[in-house]
Length: 461
Ligand SMILES: *[C@@H]1O[C@H](CO)[C@@H](O)[C@H](O)[C@H]1NC(C)=O
Ligand SMILES: *[C@@H]1O[C@H](CO)[C@@H](O)[C@H](O)[C@H]1NC(C)=O
Image (cartoon, rainbow, N blue to C red; front, side):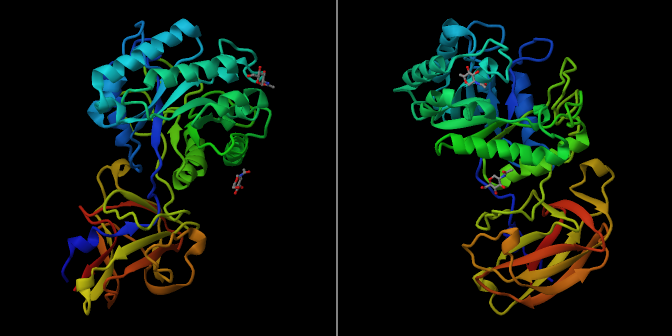
């Protein structure tokens, strides 16, 4: 049998393909008030790109343009973003009065002058302010300093003036705040002056609601839906959300890594699948201190060395998949009694008259199970079916797989094996789709990858 890399490389999982922005929030200083430097920001941006089970967490939301501890020097995160090809949601701190806002504008203009398009090409948006309306609201318990809506509107105008005629003039302006302020009509003038709306929502903090982890997803999407309804059709970006890994219980919300994983699956994975721009809170928040609650995906220590506290992969058999996205390596498939994954292959026209062989490959067990690209959480086998819907342009969703025809099965998946599932005449020039389902209780997830081969492959003989 001839192993055909070009066919292998066209294997595509139907989900996880998406175009939306994925990133994290990045503060300007550590817990001991030491400023993050160029090396620190680079380290963080690179760590975000290399999180196991994820791809393309390559955007950074900043809270300020100013290097911590200086008056108006450009924050070193800008150079780090250029060095690491990280896109930027810029932030202008807007809760400390006009003079301080002037310093933000000075730093913004300095960055444009200093770095030019190397910088401005990376900018996906600018947020004028962060939770300023929350801090003056009843929910924020008047916990000033915040900013009145009319002052924010003025800052938004000042920002538009500052970027006019520069290479940043096309930047989309938004504001970040808690979802509650957007449903408060007193803040409508702010919404009217924005290109997009940044929403922060934390079910953990919603102490007047039944906010156990089981309700986390519903509380979040209720907040999101209310924000969408209140913001007049403007795009809503999720600029902060997360579930703490440690800290105090708030009403029914219990911080733990296990609960953060559940929240990740219920909220993060759904937002990713729905192509909503997302900045998760947060990659790491415990450096040089012990915040409580802590929302960090990674514990303290060397970011490049410490493992995430919970699994970051997303169920692959999800909705709104984009089959036109062709992928080779690094996409996560998830199999369990409730989750299946669909794979598509583009069969080349020149394979007319040949035989296409479907095989499932398992690499040898890894000496480092935590680092392994495949995790079998509960043993069992797989059932492979061809999926009726083969239209190249159609979107296939979990509910839309339609009729499927059994093509083969493996009763028990073991490391270091190649399982030949079926050999069929090649559907030359067509896109074909196969669904893998779990049987016998199998729960596993893996990255489809070619070296060593792992996942479902089609070869031609
Ligand atoms: C509604 O918004 C206004 C203006 O931001 C604020 O003063 C007021 O406290 C908010 N109302 C509530 C109930 O939070
Ligand atoms: C949010 O809106 C979507 C789309 O209308 C709906 O399917 C979903 O059930 C809503 N979620 C909540 C929690 O209200």
